[in-house]
Image (cartoon, rainbow, N blue to C red; front, side):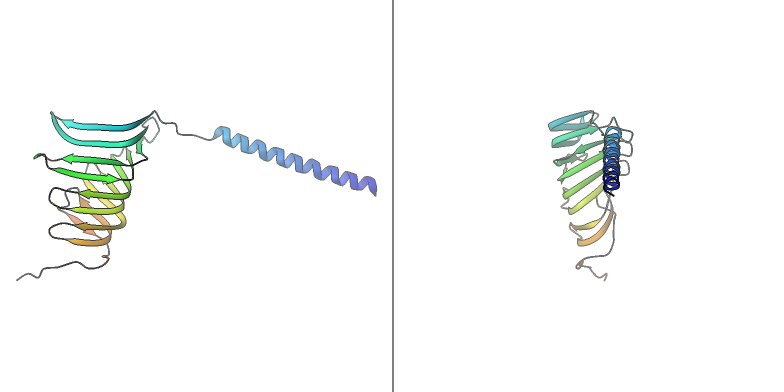
Length: 184
């Protein structure tokens, strides 16, 4: 019985070693084949001025920009937040600020996250935790709770679908109350 016990221990040890060995090799193979998206560039303390026909359209500032436009689905990331000042044709300024931003180059959609705050020269004030902006359609939307105030509205709700100028707004369920004027 003693030799049988040694054989069992040897067999168990060999199986354990093979199992651990295969697992380690598998983990190593997974690590080698893992795709790491490396940026094409990184920049600190950036300021980008967007112009058209010598007119300033917007100024973007950010503490850091990481450029992944070399990826199959290209994007540019602002991991430490960003601020954008948009100028209309009368040089009136709309301010946009967020703790994090990502711009998808192929779709021209911007995803702003964390303490998103927008103010317009007409007095509109929007606050939310996440906001998407479709650059081509000049449309903003979110499924998050938000507050919006201007001369006509003081709204707290979920789900916002609005034009960039906020002259067309659709909301989801209201949180709190909205002041409504009766027609005479």
